Image (cartoon, rainbow, N blue to C red; front, top):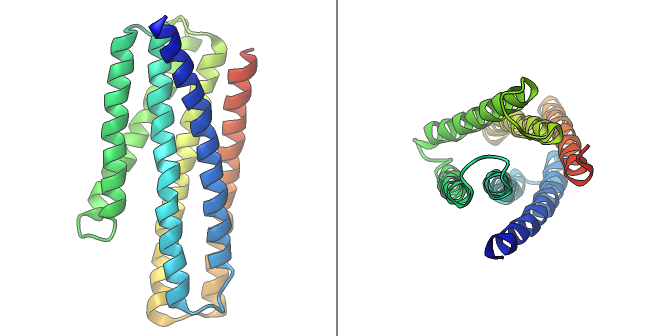
Length: 223
């Protein structure tokens, strides 16, 4: 009975975190667009709003890590992978450690060691993608006895993490341009590049949302 209650609680959390994730994305993108299109605003004010965007962006990072932890815990508790409660505990430890890294990465982003810490975080994301793709391939090859819909869900989630990395790389380029604006001021050409980078990042975000929709449909219908 306790296991059943725990599973129900984690499933509710799994759904709640999805709503938290999408809501955060919408707020971030809306504010990001506002900042990118306000070339007439004093740069100090734009920069303050951009710092706010990056602070809110933490919620998306939290949500992604929470979904990894919740998903792995549910796989163990539902019997899709061995370990049961042990797997759930391991998932919790991984999620807590990763959340700590995400927080340190954000707080240290302007420090000399910030770039190295950010690379560690991105490396973990590449590793997560590799694991998810490997598991999906093992299911397709008959080496793991998981339902086909779950393999597709894992593959789609790998795509979600990949999209997140794509957005991160777009932001690295964006903030290089942002420093140009800070040092040399706004010009029509620079503002056009700002808007172009916004569109590029948002295009990747659109693919991310589409993949999350696929994941949701797979979870509901389990074809």
